[in-house]
Image (cartoon, rainbow, N blue to C red):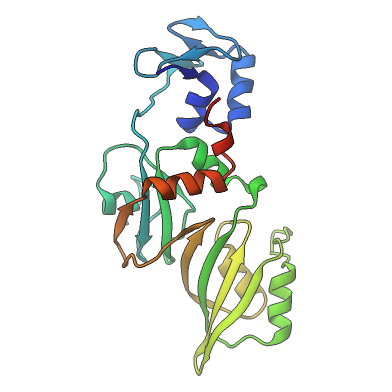
Length: 245
């Protein structure tokens, strides 16, 4: 089926639809060896689409998987690293994006998909989509520490985190569980913020990305999203209104 080329490119993970439009406008995109113009269409099942001479690979079937990543697994494929990756848990040969990467020692919800446009929408910092975490700190925070975390914290590199929702879920003799809802995802941000304000973090579990929840998935388990969940997620990401383009 023919679709606008910028939509095909975005789906393949080349960036936002606007970024793909700029590539077309710059004359860097060809279909069957001919430079195309904005608005041109192609059928990825029949036509050869190339960017700067490199052939674009488009998987026909869209895949959406919710995974509960265990600790000790990498979110990215890294052939130089001995640790197993989330792809090892799923065992699907199709190249998938890990939406909402988690560090090696963190666990919880990751969305695995080959829908490059959705992956870009959910991960690009300018969209500020919500992510919810359950975090154990080895010290019960006082009110001042909570307020500092909620307002935003200046990290060692001079950047300031965005305001976040932070509340205590339960206090124990060895620390406390916090619920943290953020609209960004800098590398190891929760651990860095905790260390910065005197609340060392020992466990992180993500339970929600946007309107997609971890639910009852056990550690290491995964499942395909239902068509309804996919529609709701794409609507949350602001993509449904563009489906006809």
